[in-house]
Length: 382
Image (tube, rainbow, N blue to C red; front, side):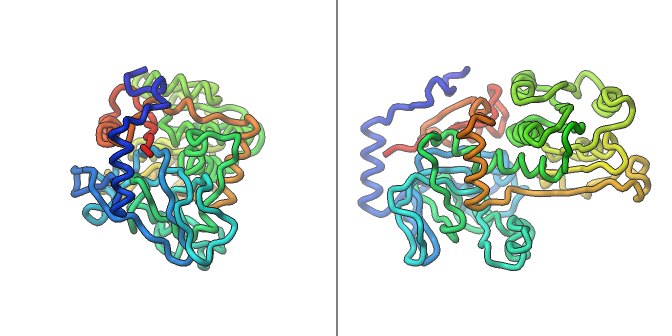
C-alpha cells in the first residue's frame, strides 16, 4: 500500500490545519475543492452556505472522490466555473431549516450522491434520479449547485435525503452507501436476477465491484467479472466473482459465451462507459435477458451502437435498462442495515487516504488511475 494508503486512515490533524479551520468559522468562510475550468481544479474560499426552510447544512468529516468528478473536470459533464466538486460525503448537522423535523444539530449523517425532491411526479413514480422530469435531475451536487468536497455543504429536502448514521458504523463505511453501493445495487436491481442465474459484470472499478456485490446479494448463481487490473481482479474475487475474464488476454465475449456453454448470460452489466463494453453486453446476453447500464458514456461524444444480430434485429426480447443512484433516506438506511449485519463490508475498495489539504493530489491520482487507486478517503480537519 502506498504512503497515502489505509495505514494512514486516522490522519493526524496538525495544529496549523485546525487553526485555519477555526479562522474560517470566525469569518463564515470555508475551503472548497472546485473545478475552475475544464482540466483545472483548485481549492478556493467560499461562504459557508445557509439553509432554506427545507434544507440542512452539513459540516463534512469524511468524503471520497468519484470517477464522475474526473468526467466532470474533463468536460464530459457541463457545469459552471468554480463549482464545488464532490457528491460522496458524510458529516454532522451544522444547521437545519425551520421546516426540517427528525434531525438534530450535531447529529452524524450521510446523504446520497443524488438528492431528489421526493415530491414531484417523477419521484412519486419511483424515478427519483430523474427528479422534476429532467434527465438525471436528482443529481444536484456539482451539476446544479455546489457539491460536497468542501468543509460545509448544503442538502436540499433534508428530511428526505439525510440519514442518521448508526453508531455501529464508521464514517468510512457509511460513505459507501452514499453512491458506490447504491449505484452498483441499481445495476443489480435492473439486471432482475432470479436465484441461481448467470451474470457478467463489465469492469470492476468501485461501481462494478458494488454491482458484483449486489448480484451476489440478489442470488446470482454464477458471476463473471471482466477486468484486467490485478488489484481489481483480486477484489472482484473477494466480493463474490466466480470467474475473472481478462480482456487483454482473450476476447471477453468469446470467453463469456464459452463459460456459459454458448448460451450467454441471463444478464450483463455495463459499469465502465465505453462503446466496446456497451456492445459486448448485447453480444453475451441470451435472448430474453437483461442489459443493465450504469457506466457514464459522456466522454465519447458519439451515439452508442447496438449490434443487430445479437439484438435479434430488434426482436430478441432483450431488456435494456439504464440507471443511476436513487438517493433518499430509506435507501441509505437499507444499505446501512446490510453493513450493520455483516452482509457486506465495502471498505476494502478504499486504497488510499488523504487529508483535505491533499485533495488535489488525490484527484490527480484518480484522474491518472495512479498507484492502483480505486477509492481515496478524504479526512477533514476540525
